[in-house]
Image (cartoon, rainbow, N blue to C red; front, side, top):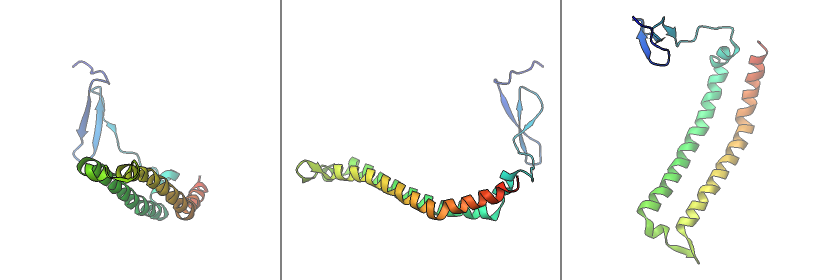
Length: 139
């Protein structure tokens, strides 16, 4: 059987035990599962309770903030598409609701950035630095 060049095909092989391996160029399986490395400081950190708590805190802040901003952004897009009369309504002189709401998108972006920086400096970064020092001491 001719050898297949490595760039031509990549096959997925299931060994029957639920492990999937890559077989490139018709050769032996190459595992995509990282070997156990209990002494690796990154693995130790990822398996620690402190890291899990830090990740949870981060997600509890970032996901709602992102969802809120995306909802606000898509509301603006929705209004621009389906409420053209409202968005074109002049408020003062030639300034329309569309212009005001569009500029508020920028204001919201800067506000979210400032809120995140303040939150990270107060809540997240001190815990992350403490964890890094603790894990770094094991190296």
